[in-house]
Length: 424
Image 1 (cartoon, rainbow, N blue to C red):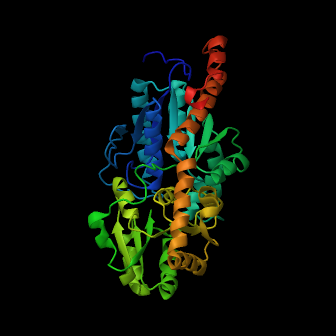
Image 2: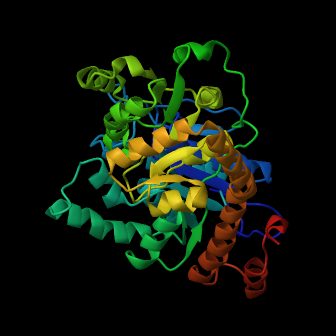
Image 3: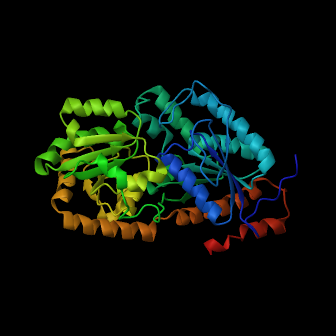
């Protein structure tokens, strides 16, 4: 193996190996963050390659390396699977092989499994490692109802989460709530906040919907949701809120877009007697998401989880959609005073908030315009990439310090004092 270059941000931007322990790309929020981060870093001049599972599809312009194909594993949706244990071993082997050729300056591990794999590869290469965390591992397993929070296995996972979170040289958090948990619950000292973003050129108001208009019956006014279809995203609560909305606004219509479990929710809508007032288009290609959102007059994102970001809200804002969500710190951080909030878990309040926007279309339109302005000014993937460069600049000198006499003191001092011009 050739000798590794001295890692530094001096003179050029770093070569980045991303570890994505997920079936990337599969049109969901976690994958959007990985893809858009890579794309924004490339736009700044970084070289980025991604190692991921055998499942998913390649995105244009992004070099992607996949594990050995496992024919019996085809799960694209989020959530726990025991199969991930051995697939992550395959991913670690793939990442090591790619790293030996690519010789990255830095390993960027997404999610907790990616942080562990990234740390192992980084140890072998003596390269610094970033852990990009989008939520709490134990919190996610609890939200997906995999673990009982009072059980011994939950405590075991939480204990190991502390160990995992402290493996990378620097941790990156997708929202302030995650950053606070990393610092205060798990004792991580170096945390950089890099919020999610949105492509405001792709996601914008006024897009032509064309043939997609058929998804909303004539004369109806659409409330849109685009995300995973599961309980912790609040989809069950949206269904439960429909009768309350329809009692006040009979022309309301719900377009609940995403996957998995579309048929499960169709059946639930039939049982509740609201099937004629809702459609489930299924999985939406990320490139078509802006056009589908353009069908809506109001957007809803009542995510129940308090340990994860809520990336769909950025897309709603960019499309100029007035947005109803549950009142959580994450939602407040994204929407600010422009969100329409219901107390977390209060289905009646959720329905009233949606109905209130539909009853006041002019006020709702003005609110959507302000949300669009807020997202353009504050939340872009370019800004996220610049935050990542700050994390890289912190991680590389820290790794040099930890590695001992690997480079001259003069070169170490140079590395510590350099940040890419985009960050000055």
